[in-house]
Length: 457
Image 1 (cartoon, rainbow, N blue to C red):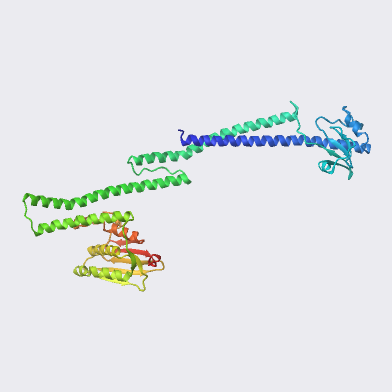
Image 2 (tube, rainbow, N blue to C red):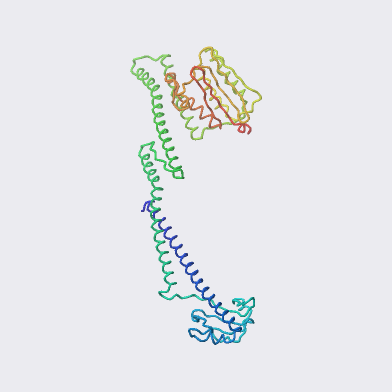
């Protein structure tokens, strides 16, 4: 099977040859037709001039039939050159249309009809019509070796050489264009094969700004994203294995010790086993929730929610913890507020996660604010604290799965999936979440929902 380069070259060559042949044929036919018409018109003009000269010198058509029937070198009086009657047949009539001479014979004395005279050429002398000439269509035959024949032969040769030259030029340009077009395709093919063999992140050179250039850019972006996704998957797999291994190691150690009789069962031992089992259960539940959200299969019970009431319920759930840590937990809502169309259970899960994070990193005496507001297009919810804040290098990855800006969190039973779950739950309900933070100044998570979403009951 031929490559696409060969196919393109053959296609360009075929188009070039076809176009050259067509143009050459049209030029040759038009040139030959125009040349023949030029020669015929020239002889017709010479014929009309000689006939008018005869009438002018004689004052009538008397004797014209005899003069034209004599094929002598000079049948006309006063030395008028002879006409080539075999090459230029015609019929001559007087002003009324009566035939005076016909090279075909048998019509002399007959009067031509009006239809025949409409195809005739009028002979006028000093503004007076003196006769008619009927010249039938004639394809002029050229004599070999004549000036006219040599001219047409030269034109024909030039046309053939032009067609051959155009075909060669089409082949050269087609080859260059085909190689230029397929070069990027070959690179894309090789890069795709590398990716199929596990060598991710392969990039191709972008050589143009046309569709092939856009294809190369899209491929490079896809390759980079695929490499990042593969790396993230590998890291996530390692993190999952680590998070599962830690509680399982504890459980395995205690169960082996209990089985071997090295320790005796008691409330403390059973409490540790229960905590580690809960840790495993939370991790499995979080992973299942994320997988359902990614697949778009997470069930949602959408209903109309009052943003202020939703924040007040979240405040009530964490008020005791905030008091124990000596942190103020405030609700600030600007009324009136448009209702919010969302799942109350999922939104409670989102707010609980954000408030837990805020409590974890806010020192005693600090403040956590739960805000609700709106603008012309959206409803805005915020969870803001004046705690430790997040470093600038950690902000871009704060919503990544298993990412922990504080490594010690993994030792506190945290899976690193909390903010990833928050982002998935917000986005699956049609909202958006962003974060602003600076070390030592606190952190603000902002959730927005479009107003039009909240208008449907």
